[in-house]
Length: 86
Image (cartoon, rainbow, N blue to C red):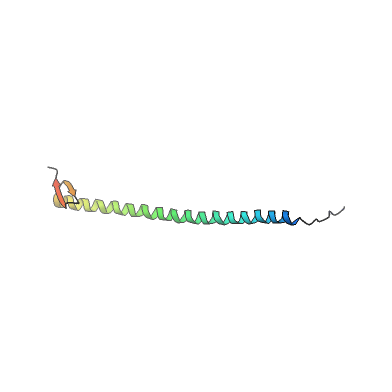
């Protein structure tokens, strides 16, 4: 069995291959950074959803307290007034 001769790559070809390898490495790094941003965004979205649920609960509690205190009606926050519906 005859062993094949090892050939030296032309410097220009070697440079092109190294550039492609570097570009692939940069792409992988960019994709990793994007994934981290995506995970952080997902975490922020979940926190916002939890906060929204807390606000809805607080709004219901305040609404019940105000209804018990003032009855059925509407509130004008700008004027600070309550208008009964009856």
